[in-house]
Image (cartoon, rainbow, N blue to C red; front, side, top):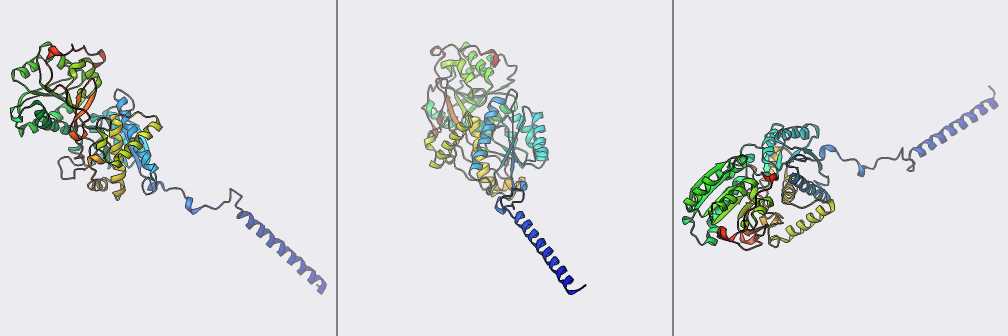
Amino acid sequence: MNKTSRLLVLVLLLAAFAVLVAACEVDEDEAADPEDPEEEPDDPEEEPEDPDDQVRIGAMFPQTGDLAFEATEALEGVETAVEMYNEDGGLDGTPVDFVDADAPDPEAGTSAVRQLVEEDEVDVIVGTYASAIASAAVPAAQRLDTPYLETTAFAASITEGPENVLRTTISSSDLGAYSVEFIETGLADELGESPEDMNVAMVYTDDEFGTSIADAALEAMEDSPAELVVEESYDAGTISDFSSTLLQIDEEDTDVVIHVSQISDGILFWRQAQELDIDIPAAVGAGGGYGQTDFAEPLGDAADGIFNIVPPTPGSIDTEALTDDAQELLARYEDTLEEQGYDQGVYTDWGFMGTWVFLNEILPNAESTSIDDLMEAAQQVDVAPEDSITGFGFEFAGPDHETPGQNLRAEPVVQQWQDVDLQVVFPEEFAVADYLNVPLPDWEERDEIEEPDEDDE
């Protein structure tokens, strides 16, 4: 090959190399083109959240069946607490995830626990509204090493054995003990009696709810200066005659009756007292039927002056007694409910506040969502009654307590029926009304009690 030929080959090679270099530069430019959505590089500040870092809460309430109405209120309270917590940034900037399951009865409750833990992979279960469902669900959750937050069910047994439960509301045993305390203090003063001169009758249903309240009241009576003169239990589903019990109450010169009832048996008790013309100076219901409008409406003005022991809510107490922060939280909560189209009720309030304390006072201070870590964090909770929208505070019993996980500051208030409406009359700082009809008027001064509706039978 002569010199001219070699020079021509060199020129061609250089030209080919230049074309190759230019093509590579074009490919690199296209790869880095920010307008190409297929090739846009990831922004390290917008990486997706690691699902392992997100806490998932499973709410379990009856959403179908006979218990659904008020249980749905409780569920809406829990949901509202989670929504507001996430609006505030969630847990270290990560929103808490929320799922729910239907649990209309105890059997469905244990199934719902398995669904929430094994399929939905929740870290914590919140429930439950009904004591019978909670009593089945709590141990089922413990078998699956899952913490359980009970916001609305009262049965004492819920915190008398399991090691995985935190109950933010009252225990039914507190209702019984507080009934006796009220008799010795507020009621004795209003009747103008000394506690040691008072005769007390205890009448109650023989189901779990009734007996747990009665057992606590009877235990408190052992140390009380007042005297227990009548004790009678009965089956609320079959009782048709209170005559013998009422005659005992009359013969023993009873000053006050503590009555744990459902609606229809409560009405029956008072209708027969009127028929037998047996005057009872004072009566204290402990939740159940005595807290329902369907109990008071048939009694008319005969209900005026009857007491009921119940956990407080912002709808029943004087909220001016709350701190400014608690009043601000209450206003925000009520606004959020309205935005969601939810009605505010007692179970909404209890479900909300219990979940709110868990999210803000327990979860951020726990090393993990294990039972042990959450229970340990709960020991540090110290919320005064005036700092809570419900009017009761939060302090949880430790593992050595007879009821571990129970909120020791979930104290009740005393309401009184006045014009078919319940008004808080005790303690004084939360009272919204003065006492009425203490002692109760004679029957000749009151209206005839109506027959109960068929639906209440």
